[in-house]
Image (cartoon, rainbow, N blue to C red; front, side, top):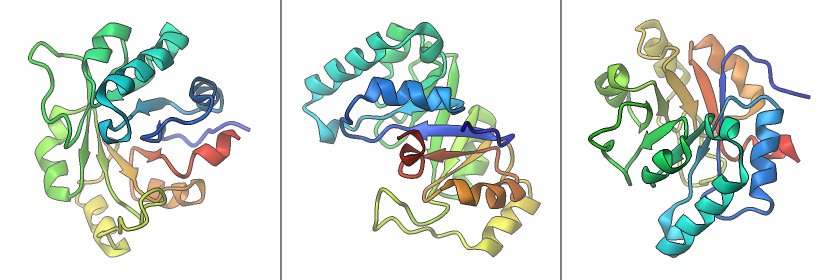
Length: 192
């Protein structure tokens, strides 16, 4: 079974090491995931070890796979592996000065979406639902609030729903005009 939903499907890697991660990333692409965000938090590793681990993963993947990956927290890897792009979040708050490639950003409010929408290729808005991977991360967005934001054009093809997203929620998110979904907890069962 593969994914064909007429919206962007993005997988985010868990922040820790997972068994056979290269195989899992390949399987995500084979199943129809459009983009994989490679995210490994420094807090989950010793700083040197995380860089070594990321180099191991990226060295095992092909140029084609690299071209469909966005890096979090370590923008220098974008240049080392010709990745699709760089993601901005609380850990990396600015793009490198000479950077002109694909760029994405994490947002947690409609104000941030309005502020950054014209500067980025897409924006994560989270948490849309209560998080699967972070049990205490609750959604501030009600159906009415999301519907209003959709009608006002705040939610559109450049806004990606993140947080508690599972495959059964995709039709609802599509009806709100999200341009895609990003999943961490909800997507890894799909590739087992």
